[in-house]
Amino acid sequence: MKYPKISYQLIRLAAVCLLLQVTTLLSAQEAEQKTHQAPLSKMELQTGDSIVFLGDSITHQCLYTQYVEDFFYTRYPKMRLKFHNAGVGGAKAWDALARFDRDVAAYHPKYVTVLLGMNDGRYQPFNDEIFKTYYDDMKELISKIEGIGATPILMTPTMFDARAARMGKRPRDPASVELYNSVLAYYGTWLREVAAESGFGFVDMYGPLNNITIAERQKNPQFTIIRDAVHPDAPGQVVMAFALLSDMNVQRQVSRITVSKKANGEATSTARGGKLSDLKYSDDGVSFTWLADSLPWVVPAEAKLGAELTKLGHRMSQESLSIHDLPPGRYELSIDGEVVGQYSNTTLARHVELQGNPKTPQYQQAMQVALLNKERNDGPVKNKRNTWRVFQVYARMKRELDAQGDQKDEKTVAKLAELDKRLADQDRVIQESEAAAKALEDKIYEINQPEARKYVLKKVTAAKKK
Image (cartoon, rainbow, N blue to C red; front, side, top):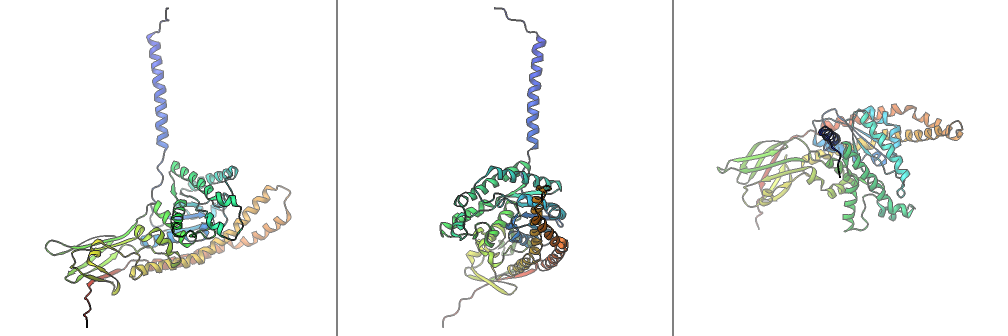
C-alpha cells in the first residue's frame, strides 16, 4: 500500500497550530486563575471609616450590632468609627434595595455587613422560585454595595430553632418547622460561595448558633437562645457578635503582663498591650503601674450567658497577668487600692486572667461603656429604625399599586397617601435621632479612655490562732 507523501512544511504548520492551541488554552487558564480573589480575611479600619449593618428584624433588635460596637469602643478607644444600623423588621432583600440610597449609600460605608434571608425563605420548605427571587435580589444588592465603593460582608441567615417553635404556642405548619432550618443552611451555603468567589467578607452566623444549641441540649433538652424560634435573645446575639468579629480576625488580646526576676535578683518584665512602669519587687510581693492601650470587651447583664457560652473573655479579650519567682504562699491583688482577688504563687506563675473580673476598675469602666451604648441603641438608634419600618410598608404598597397599572385599588391608594403623610417628617426624625445618638457616643469616647492603674500584689499573712 502506498501512503501519500506529507511535506515538511505541512508537518511544521500542524505543529505550529497545535502549539498555538496549547498556548491559547494555557493563557485562558492563567487568565481565569488571575481573576480568582481571596475572600476578605479581616477588616482594615481607621478613624472616620463607616460600617453599615444591613439586615432585617434581627438587626433591627440593635443587639449584635451593639455588642460589636462595644468591642470597637473598648478595644480601639483612639480610633473613632462610624456605625449605622440599617435593619428593618420583616425585611427581605428587595426591601433593602428599596431603601438603599438613603439608608446605606448615604453613610459612605467602607464595609456593609448583610444579614438577610430569614424572611426571604418565607418560613416554608425549600421552594426554587422563592430562592430565585432571593438570588436575584441579593445579586443586585451586592452589586449596589460594590457600586458605592464598599466591601460586602455576607453573613449567613441565623438559626431557625425548630424545637423552640414546637415548644411555643404559635400554630405552625409541621413541615415548615421541620425543614426551615435546612432552607436557611442552603441560603447560607450559597452566600459562602458568592463571598469566596468574589473576594467579599463572609461570616458564619448559622454554625455557631446551631452548634452551641446542640451542645447545651446534651445537658438541658429544653435549652434555647432563640425563644421565639427566629430572633436570637441577647445571649444569642452575643454569639452573633462573636462570630462576626472572630471571622473578621480582629485583635483578640487586651494585654499580657509577665513579671519575674533576673539571675541577679533584679526585677524585669515583658508586656504587650500597654506600658508598664515603676516595677518594684520585694520579699512579700510586687507593685507596678500599668497603662493599657484598651479595655476588656464586656456586655450587659442580660447578655452574660452568651459571653459564657462563647468563652468571650478568654478568646477575644484576654487580660493575662503572670508573676514568677514569688515565695510560696497566697497573695492579694489590688488595683487602685481595690482588692480584686487572692491567688497562690503557683497560680500566679502560670497566669491569671482578669478580663472577666467585675471587681477590676477596667472591667467597671468597660461596663459603663456598654451601658451607655445600650442606652444609645435602645433610644435614638431604635427610633431611627422604627421610621424605616413605616417606609418599608409604604414601599411594598407602592410596588403593589404600580403592578396594578391603571386599575388601582382605591383603598390601597388611600392607605398609601396616609403613609406618605406619616413619612413627611422622616428626615427630621432621622436627623434628630442621629444627633442624640452622637451625643451619647461623645460621652462614650470620654469614658472609654484607659487610665494608668496601680497594681499591688502582697503576700497574705496567715491569721494567728488564739
